Image 1 (cartoon, rainbow over the protein chains, first blue to last red):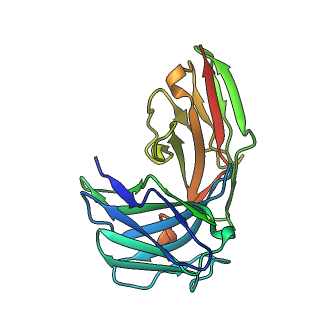
Image 2 (image 1 turned 120 degrees about the vertical axis):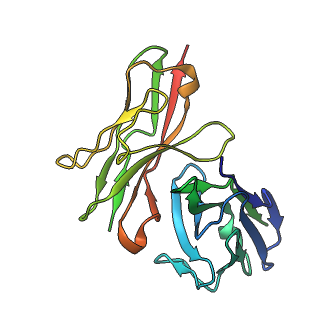
Length: 117
Length: 111
């Protein structure tokens, strides 16, 4: 089956530094990737949508200069949290959508837990 | 704006009992509804979608446009069904794939 990986699975960083999270589709080409954020005991909230080779579109209330998204290839999207602060601590989940066995499906990565100290 | 509501945060049943996880939505257009499941320490995965009208692992869900509901049902719950269940909605057109999730329901099936 189709697999989406995320790296790292968890990261701790100091306030003010930047952190990059990678999302890869391992065995299919993801024309679209989505980034979600999940606070403890809460649901997933869509942050942004990225299509390969074009600028990401951000949901209302999400700072695009804070959360930089790059979708440079059909198998890789990155989310960079710039100048991270403790309130950015969260679980970040990506999903990738593309043709798998002739059907367009969306698959989720395992998530990345970010802790900002 | 679209919204998905799962009124129950926690649901406990005994093995073999019927289970129903409730989901209501609000959206002015024609949405596509999904149920996703997340087993312990695993990633989110699609359980079923309303357009395919299929039964997965004994679960079914019918879209009721009049009541704007998409409840998930299983006649005989199993212990392995214990998981977090999310109801989700996506719009059509260029926004297809952008998912709005409900708050999730933790289902616990007791032996």
